[in-house]
Image 1: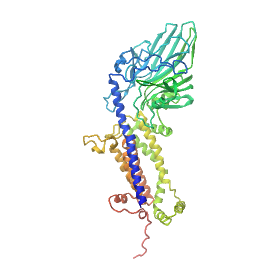
Image 2 (image 1 turned 90 degrees about the horizontal axis):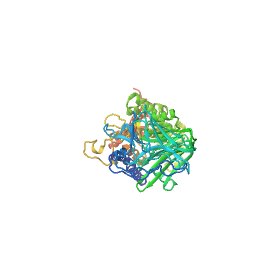
Image 3 (image 1 turned 90 degrees about the vertical axis):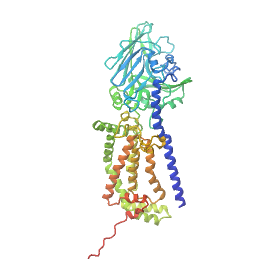
Image 4 (image 1 turned 30 degrees about the vertical axis):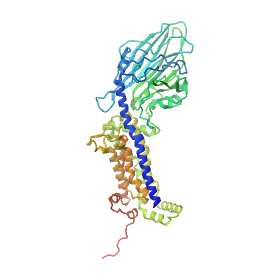
Length: 624
């Protein structure tokens, strides 16, 4: 008995430790970091002093195959984002999905905001700003160009070059042509076009009017100054990302690239040579910027980080093979830039229509890709018909239940048979109480005789785990779920339930600590889980009984910080499981223990497992 009490106490302590640890390290950060990031974005837009923008930004690699000098020193810090934008002549960008401008100084694409997305669910909140100019806070931009061969003294356009534009606005119907003459016989032209979404096409031309051949290397890069705030979740990649041909998917967090070996003095990073196909870029949770080289030509892909006294600068770039330009000849290099929201249809469409190798991996589908992405397509298809992602989740849950119905029926039927055998199992345990090996042998013989699989009842739970994780991933990473409403108080299925039991769901005028965040839907989930567990007989072991009793409470708090859509799924799944299990138990003539177990909670002695499953008494044969 003392041993049981010690085990019980240990189990309770461990449960509390795990619960508090999860809430402290995971539950709190999810809500607090989302608020922090939104606040930082808003502060960055109005910040009067630049943050970490005085250091030079790495430009194109100065020499082929190396991490070379910056293309030119970064623009001096001038103050706010608005002041940085005003410091250079610009060409406006206007498409159905994005707005912004291109700096004619350096021909940088450094001003992109997303028309369809805002910081919060408030329709009046600021639009998401993706790219920002040099000289302002948190510069984040892309540029393209050419690198000369080692030892060459040819003058090339750099970060301070002012290009000439042929019009004042870039739209899907009106491409932009930039031009610049180096005065040494080379004329550079850059034609930039953009589609209705967020893909730029860059065609760089060089005309050689001189008397000597020139060899140049095309490049493209994404540069980000400052280490951005990230959620820091293992299931979500934020940082440098790319698919580098046969090297496959390469994901590096900001911290990881900081710790890589030196590429050059002061620059850490990683490079991949002789790559064909793919892309390199930098990704946030919902947005990304990526440069895409010519998919038919070899290139070197590189991630790098420079740390200075004023902060970090991160870069993802490609350097193409040398292109010889004979006197009188004109050569062309093609590349693309994606700068926008990671919408699944758009990203997949670019991979298919533009032939970008595995561009779909710009979205972090994770290890369960083979479940996560098909499940998303099912959800999205249903959503397009019902108009509510929450309702789509409910329907998908029903479909999953229907898909696994035969297996679940078999599992529940096996569980029902085991409940019917409780008296015999109890007798075997009592008979061989001092000999565990004989006890197990006798139990296995009983299972074999009655054709029962003792682990069959685990299958419904095991099948639910990968589906649960896949749905969690969908809610967490896909922008389609961002700010998607359900009904009532749920305005964002990808965010935790905003209500809280500890301030009586808003009736009391205070905000409880984040680790006490417990919304209405997690409570509903806990109740459904409690009912599901109480449908089974109470385990005879007191430690197991206590663990099963407290498990719904543990999961209620655990899921308090999870996306509301996931909690709604689990609640609905529990309810369907209760209905299904109740039906199968009645069909197999097994007593449902729910009401007896509930009576036990209120001090009334419930029927024991053995009594509940005892065979019926013989009929009275004395007839009148």
